[in-house]
Length: 440
Image (cartoon, rainbow, N blue to C red; front, side, top):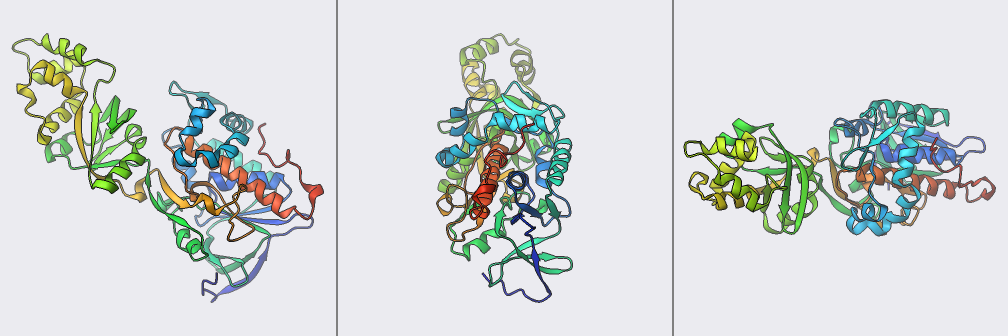
């Protein structure tokens, strides 16, 4: 592909070193960094390019509330979280498992722990110490970093073109790994601009859509002003036959939090089909309707409804506000409800969703390079020697450690694939053990 942007081109930048074929990795997120570690251990001369002034920015954002690296549940259950992409991801995750991720993290001097939810975190509970240790390891392996380099496609000779503050650079590398991320949080470097470049090469790219994102809800002005920023803890959220448990946060525009993120895929599909969708919120999912009704029947004659709901059911003000908000959606006036009717509503609060939050504010994105466009080593069939890893690929997963696990695993797969591709004329150099990230 010729981008037509030749003015200011500074000539070729050669990545090969004596006895070490050159690999260009474009994108310095978790997939690109893992690919770099694997490839460098496989005997390649690795250069990582990133458009931002520093590397790992979205990786750092992932650890803002605690870096959820992976999950401890059995592997068969774990793999099922990837839905339609599970079969393609299976061999990659089986070779770079959640156990391997934990060992790798601890090998970088960052011990991990498993929370009550089964999620796995570094004890430090943040990204920066892990990222610093990882970058030191990559530097010790000879990996070179070049920031403020934006990928622009290929020139007529097939060289990757990088826009830099000093002009356009043509990169001569034996192989390229694209790890540019999806299209969420574009201010951190992942804007999905690569989609058009790859489509121009004849690569099928499924439209990028928000995933693990909040839901837009048309709150009343009173509810929005009073309860913006308030959490809803230990609730259950239902959409059709799907249920998710966790926490939610009321925002001006709707709902955020793990419980809604886990339903973002089916919610996105429901919105695409009907324009709106109805969620059902259980405020006390561990209490049966009969238990709730019995407690409500003990309400004192002079006790206000809000006081009764707070004392008898331990409902927070925002939860009570949601019950009142339901009145606007046909639930009826809760003040005149019988205990049994109100008990039903407590665990079946209707919430009308009018849309998904924008892609730019989603935790991740769905869509990307169709998995049929790459081989088992994640090399593009349309462009031999070019590999794709991470969120650029068309897989989707909920939060809970599944996102980073697949980024690590696909990065490792692409790194191994690039090593095999570049070493194919030097079979004596291939060492499967050296091509694995260090677990110690």
